[in-house]
Image (cartoon, rainbow, N blue to C red):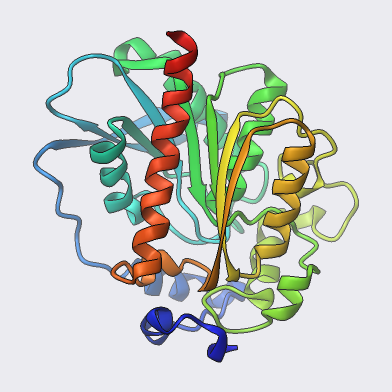
Length: 317
C-alpha cells in the first residue's frame, strides 16, 4: 500500500507509532500519542481553560481561544478532538484551534470529553452536547453570535460532530449553522471497501477501527440496537442538517463511509462540499504539515469555516 502514498506524505508514516489498542495497552498508546512539545500561545490570542458542569454533575473541561483585539460578538466554532473515541485530549489541537481564530476570525471552544472504554457511549456525545448547549446558553457572556455556531472535528471528533448535529436537530437546540466532520469515524460495521482495503498500517486501519468501536459502543457493539447518535452512518433521516464540509484521503479507511455520508446528505437536500485527496492516508495533514497537499487541505478547511459563517451573515443581511 505504501507505493500508493503521495511521496510527500511518507515521512509522517515513519514517525507515527504502530498502535496496539487492546485495553491492557491503551494507556501506553495514550501516552505515546500525547508526547508533543508544549503549546506556544500566539500573542494575539487569549487561551483560557474553563470547567463546566457536565452530564450527571461531572466536571467537563473546556478550552476557549479568542482574538484579543476584537470586541464585537464573533462566530464560534465548537471543536471536538479525535482519537478513535479512546485517545486524545483537549490540548491536542491547540495550533489548529488558534489558526481558526486568526484566519477565520472566530472564537473556538474545544471540549475534553470523557473517553471509552472507561466511559463508553453515550458519555462522550452527551459531554459534547452539554458543552454545545453551554456555549449557546452563555452566548452573551462569551461575546459570541448565537446565530453563528459551527461544529467541527476530525476522525472520531468528526464522528462526534456528525452525531452532535443529529442530536441538536432532534432536541431542537441549539441551532448549528454548519458542520465540518473531517474524515469522520461514523460506521461501526467496519466492512466497507476502504476498511477492507486498509487492514493494517497507514495510521488508522480496519484493526484499530474495530478496537475503537468495540470500546466505544461497549455492550451494544455488534447488535442491531445502535442509535444514530452513536453511529451516524446508521441514521435514517439526514434532512434539515446544516451546511456541511468534509474531506478524506483516498487511502483512509473512512473513505467509503465518508462518500456514502456525503451522498446521503446531498440526497436529503443538505448543502454539502467534499474533497477527496489521492495518495493521502488518515490524519495526513497533521503528520506532514509542510507537504503541499497538507497545506492545500488545511487552507480548504479554514476556508470552509469562513464560508460556513459567511453564509449566515449573508442571510442576515
